[in-house]
Length: 319
Ligand SMILES: [Zn+2]
Image (cartoon, rainbow, N blue to C red; front, side, top):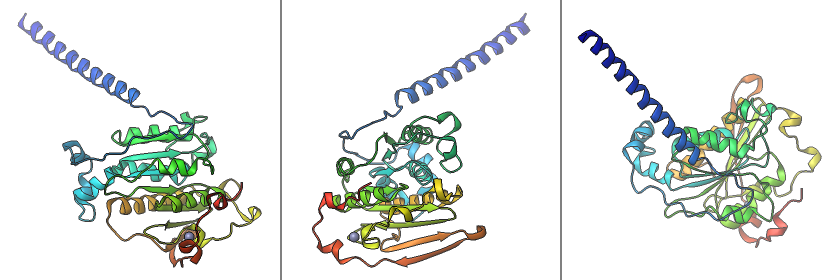
C-alpha cells in the first residue's frame, strides 16, 4: 500500500512540474504576442527614449561578457540603452546590423523597408526565414530581433523613404540626453543614399553607411562631428546606367554579412562613446578568389558641405 502511495505521489509531482512548465510556456507566448511590434506605414510621433539609469541583474547576466571589456564597461552599456538607431533597409546589410545592435542592447531600433521577403533574399538576409516569404521585411526583421532581445524597442516601418518623409522620420529619433542617435544606411540604391545623407546633414545625425556587391564591400561614417558627408565623396550622382545592384551583378551572401557586422561595430563605438570612429575615412574590403583585402582611404571634405546653405528640395536626386 505505502509503495502505491509513493508511486502516486511521485506521479503527482511529475505532473505538477509539467503543469508549471506549460504555464510558463503559455505566459511567455502571451508576453511575446502582446509585445509584438506594430507595423507602421507612415511616420508617426514617438515618445522620447529614456534609456536605463542603471543595469538590472538580468542586464548584468545578459551583457556580462561585453561588460567585462574595459572598452565598453557599465558606462558604455548604459549609453547603448540611451541610443536610437534608424536602419534604412532590412536586407543583406540591415539584417546582421539589426541583429548585433539588438544583441548588444541598443535602446531603440527603427527598421525601415518597403519590400517583402522573397526566397532569393534568404542567402544573405539572415533575419528572415522561409515562413516569412511574402511578409513585410520590416516586420519579419522586428519579430526576429524581438526573439533575440525583447528589451530592445523595435519600430518596423513598411514604407519607402521619400523627400516628403525622410527628414520628418529622422527627426523622430531625437538624441536622448547625453547620447548620440545614429542613422544607418543599408539601402541598395543611389537616390536613397543621397536622401539619407542629406537628411542626416540637415538634422545633424551621424550616418554609418555600408554597401556590398559581388565580392566587395565598403564602409564609412559620414557627417560625424562636422566630418565629411556622402556628397563630399560623391558630389555628382553617377549616371543610372552605370549603377549595378545585387539583382543584376550578384553578391556572395557572406559579403554583406561581414559589412553589416562592421557597420554594427561602428554604431556601437559611436553609441558607447568608446573607440576610434571610422570618420573621414572609407574602408574598402574585397574578397577576390575568397582572399581578404582591406584598405582604407582618407576623404577630403568638399568646401560646399561646410559653407553652402543647403536647399532640401535641391538635395534630392530624382528617382
Ligand atoms: Zn558634404
